Length: 294
Image 1 (cartoon, rainbow, N blue to C red):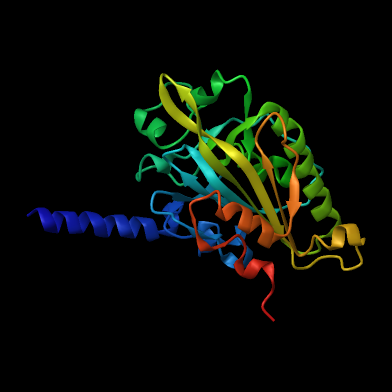
Image 2 (cartoon, helix red, strand yellow):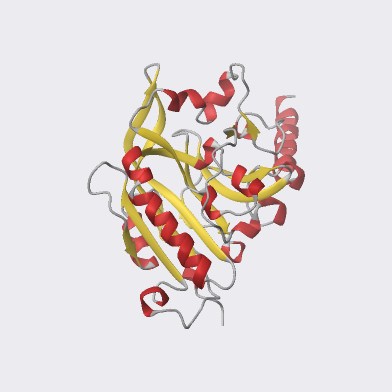
């Protein structure tokens, strides 16, 4: 009697995972409703060992906004991938912080939701970071992977304020070198990208964590990294900018010192990351390294 019941459960689970209507924690991104449009050529970074990682289609107000590969054990995103929207760079910090219900329950709705005023069920704390994890940490801030200043629409901005899209960043790093680089990328893409710009921003970790109640709660990134891909760009741009198209990357140490941002070609970034992440030798951030098919 046990096997037929188990088979039925597995079939139901497979159907749920494949259903576009419940496409927040998904098996793949290759559908519009599963955030395919947030990825260059509809293809996520490859080479990750993803058995324990969760693919999140970040939905807000019933619309797919961007994608996140999330580590429910470390309680941080591995990366977020999104399309850049031309923006004035303003931050909208009056949005409520949100969480991802489906990381904890398959029966939950498909949208991210604001944290409740009352205490959350333990299931949620088991699968993701919660506000209390960041409440008593003085030297760290919630640093966005998909920053709101890279979005223009207020709802797209609001969708970046989920704890599944942030990591603990040293305050001086978050408000200094990393913030400066995000703004530099914004200006570069605003002025010289003519088509759609795709961005992937991620983390590496070394084992350090934020602890709460004597438990390891949130992994602290050792390095932050980011890369953009824009194949339709201004070929008359100054050389100081033009050589950074169609694709370029950067990384920086998440620390008080030696935290300057190092800008590098995409192959150099991938080589740097292969030695610091759980990926195979085929690790690739953008499909075909952002070289358009001829």
